[in-house]
Length: 56
Image (cartoon, rainbow, N blue to C red; front, side, top):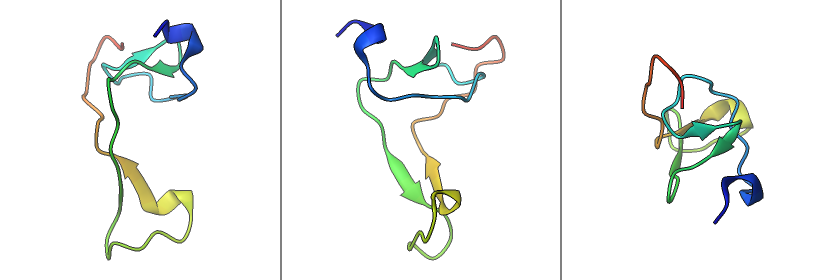
């Protein structure tokens, strides 16, 4: 898939998978933080994240 067609937006500019604010990972995994029950998006985290100091 052309990255410009990817519907998954990403604003984490230092993630290796961030390509022009779109996620280029083949698949993503989003988990809850803490007790396993997320009540808002603040209670979630993208476990696919890989730190890249130069950005994606």
